[in-house]
Length: 230
Image (cartoon, rainbow, N blue to C red):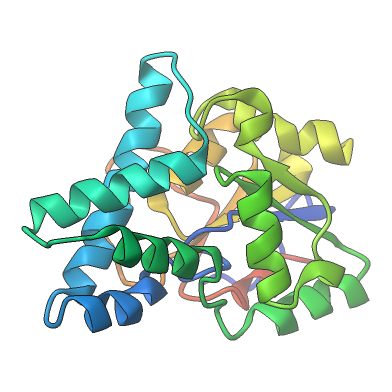
């Protein structure tokens, strides 16, 4: 990644939550305990269907809370893999989703942003309650403000109404906000909207074939600091 600061220099940073700050695939361990040999497959299929449902609802002008979509995605993924998911197993996995593992570099990066006087928030598809539990579970409550949820506009990313929550809350134009996501489609949507963008490509995925590319690409959140003035 180019380590020269972005221009114009970001005055605030907004992080996507799921996949970016919190590891959505950390549910695979609990899933493996329930379904030996199928934990990773279930975690992958669950995430894919969860995102599919956000797109289906948004394209159809409908809305359901992200928590409900997450549950529906789990049920579909289990059925697709032929797994006998009972009520107790479902609740165990849903509770695990409330407390996803945070990536290890999160706190150091957020502390560094605070030391530089750079405001750091979240802009997520997640429901406010989901985000509150995840942030508190990770011990990051003192380092993240604002926490912006798609629930407030009753649609999901990549709808411009969701991305607009950032400039409205921060009082800054999008180009002066660094939007950080591990989801290539989200980084693309934010770039279209006008944010400065950093795609954290943790798993070495190919870039989206649609243009423009994100402003920067890296493999972990520490790259956020390279986008800012020293």
